[in-house]
Length: 248
Image (cartoon, rainbow, N blue to C red):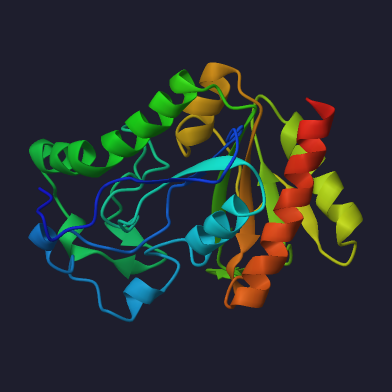
């Protein structure tokens, strides 16, 4: 499916040092393979949260400059295929996202789904798996952002820290960041919850390898400019250092 004109399915970066933290950014970009045209989605809608996690890749890259880490990210839109969903998820390739129709995702054949999976989803997760095997990280941090308003739901929290069967790191992140910035509204397992169907990186790579982990969700109106991104990179670095010092 991908051609020489398309972005690579995986972007791998690392900071100086041992790289003991593994960062992932599943929804970092909004590219569409040339073979799929524009999926029938208006250019304005491709700027919205339905197409990508706004600010998440910039935040991940800023964090990479503050802690000794490796980063696995990808540039394709979650509307092409969602790299934080598994094969059983109905949202793997959404036909509707936040009431916006995606005509290019309607009535896909199994071979069309497999083509997107093989080109984008599989290489991304193969890279994460290979990095865990090559040099087991002390901590896995999956970086996301969320929209302040979803339907009728206005999200008051500035950030959420998510986990399922291994909640210790998420709680530590919230405590450390709350102490550093007490004015922020922080939540555990909001605005989403993690499970085996709605998520992929945490259950497969985190829980599956018994790695300490957290899925971070930052409200995207705080990641609109370099100052906001820098602030959140500083806060996440504080939390990472706290976890590393405590070795949960």
